[in-house]
Length: 246
Image (cartoon, rainbow, N blue to C red; front, side):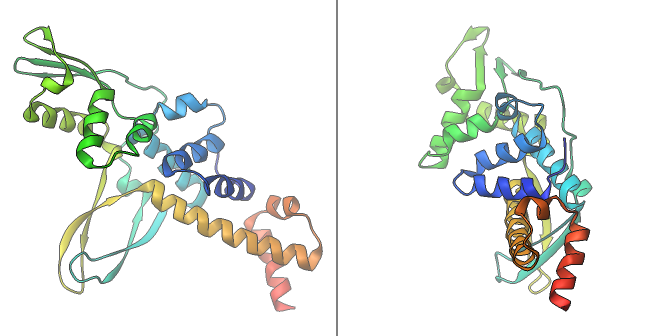
């Protein structure tokens, strides 16, 4: 995996303007992991994908994550600060375990973990129940009850809940919950941390900053965009300081 250069950040941001968030994640990883095919990236489990995104964010922008959220009780704006290592549960893996087994009393289920293709398939579902049902159909490979194959619509709610828990345990990086406390009202709650959304917000801010830098330096010195972006951030800032100081 390679870090995102200034040029890559602008190119990724431009491409991502017309993409669904699921596709933005794959675009980010395609630039960072040129040795992997699109199919290989799309086949990563959601937890594996997010582990890659966490590592990419760390090597591109550093290990510190600074963000904010709002208290669901009083609406107070709260800042949070953490390290990538605080929320890294698993490292990006080169090997993918495709099939898993759940044995529960008379039941034996063969299943795989959801990936980006599955998220894309359920993206247009009208409600959570429809999305859950379609995801179950896609990820359940085989179900046997007392040795007899049955269809997924024969599964009881209890079995489905056990299957969901098993999926979560097998892919823990897919759902990261932050324990938060409001200093204003004392409310405590858990909030889902979405590395893709967080990283993309940072990519957007970085891209807009880079465009302003290119505009200023190109206007002042007449340099090409490619030459400006190929500079280190440190050298660009030195030139920017000269422009603004002068």
